[in-house]
Length: 328
Image: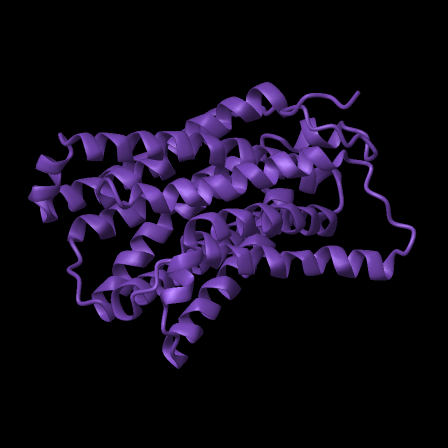
């Protein structure tokens, strides 16, 4: 392995863990808002993130007055719809099932992403890639076992119809995430990263704002805001904005599979944060799972990105995303 490949691998690993930490930060802010301030505005919180992303589009228009997107607007709208509803379903699932079941969202996204990448992005996965994925899935298994051991009452709840509904939300949400991730990877590798983020922000803002007004208007009006709640609300928005920004860089240099694998460590970081911030317990199984996940990421990153050759074969001005219908 040459020096260039080594630096690229370390950069991808660094980007992935940065994203994982940003996600952990947003989870901490959400938990603080819910537990200490009684603020439950899942969709409204995302509105702020999409609004900040519009800044990329504004900067692009400012620096390139004659800019015109060659990608049909409705394709960006569909990607934004998948992104908005993926976020919504994830939060909704927590109301019906356990955190153990929600972690299935992380696991099931991986095979779906790999399937879509093979069929739509001409991904070429090797034994090294599959070995890395297997290690990561083994690691997440340890995390799930730890949750089951720590809360036996959650196992009994899994037979409840509400828990089953939550599990289905997880699986449906993971499929939406996978489609969104693969479409995003295609966009950032063939088009301007700023264009994609800006258009995602534009349509994501419109869609999430309508949804927030429809479902959370009365909740928002009833909240008594304080300095603390504003700080954590702003922290969530900023953390999510940074996560989206860094994700676009990682998807350009890596692929959607290693991106989702990197997110698995956020479960570990979240538990560590819970120990110090929310007085939760930390099982040794979490440490074992974390080692497996990191090992899987290192192994996976040793092989070239599976979509590099397929994506580079596309012409730069080919704006049609094969996951979506072709524009007439």
